[in-house]
Image 1 (cartoon, rainbow, N blue to C red):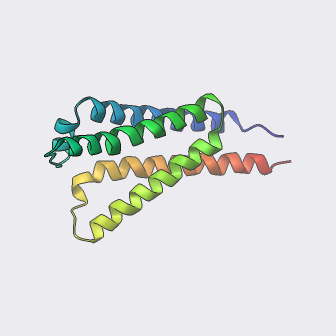
Image 2: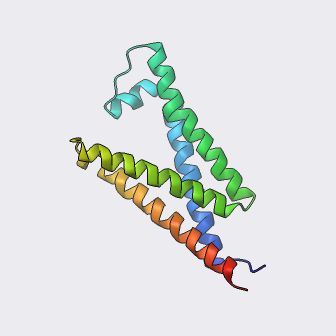
Length: 137
């Protein structure tokens, strides 16, 4: 079996590492102070159930993705990790574009669109390079 090139390995590691750090920072931010961070996003929280929902949606889910990303990074499951990132970013971008098409201003989150697009492109590039290397005999 051919091993991927050093460039492919480092690209995969960097993308997975950045994804893990990003998801961890989102988790910590919303778990530590969900009300203030929700308000900064334009969300209002009026009950303890709302606080719990913010912690779950913006804290627990990113924590889960961070742990999966870390696992894939540490145990060299690069294809699985890059596939997770590509699927997640593709879905997020689709939902954001749909929201923009239904009348919600996309300019408010243009930086997020850019970051998600970069993650999608880099993860797809890593998948492509790893698959290309695996096909070589």
